[in-house]
Image (tube, rainbow, N blue to C red):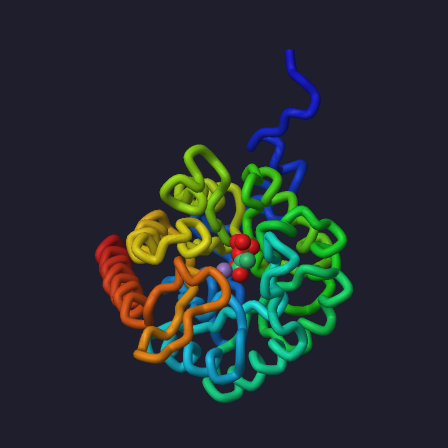
Length: 298
Ligand code: PEP
Ligand code: MN
């Protein structure tokens, strides 16, 4: 007996034919689509590190973090101008002023910028400032937002909903693809599963990385910051993600020099620029090893 409403991996070719590896044949079995953001390439040999503050709080703070992450080896800057907060009384981000800051900091540092869009009415505006649009966990199934993002002409970073199955996540990506935008990068950011909240913010589902790779040719990255919520866990989570085949990382960083202000958002999970540098070194070593192994295999 089959029960209507149940979906499984076997349904993916029907749910998301445009991004399904099984439907879009003719691709190499290990091919990952290359998504370009400026001159940053997702899906190539080298995993991409995106780093920056949780929220854009001021020009000075954003520039300082951007310079630090660039010096540590990050290739792209993250930073929220519109923040999804649990309480409406908490800091909501600087809005359009935050977008202006991001644009200026990009001009100063040369780092392409990704920032979150929560409202379909703001897609066009945010696309004028950012190099890549982030759709957050809470909005993964906001279908009007996905449709607008599909039309915006910019690459999209699509986070996994905190309680989303792989089918739901890839179905959401298909909404963007259906509008003609195939420049999608998926991002695992931890799920609400037992015992999330006890010793870590969420449960980092690393197994989903190879599963995504089996089902679609889209690149997939990991956000170890929101997945763990604990700065001490971010480095190991990052290394684990790379070992599982992630095409990149999205990491929250705060400056830690004497006198640096504590972030107004997600301070407990922000790592220092020095820790980011360790993560980048790990990636470099792993990438060299992989390239050597490939060269020997030929
Ligand atoms: C973020 O990356 O700024 C964010 C809010 O993450 P998530 O949507 O995964 O909670
Ligand atoms: Mn955050």
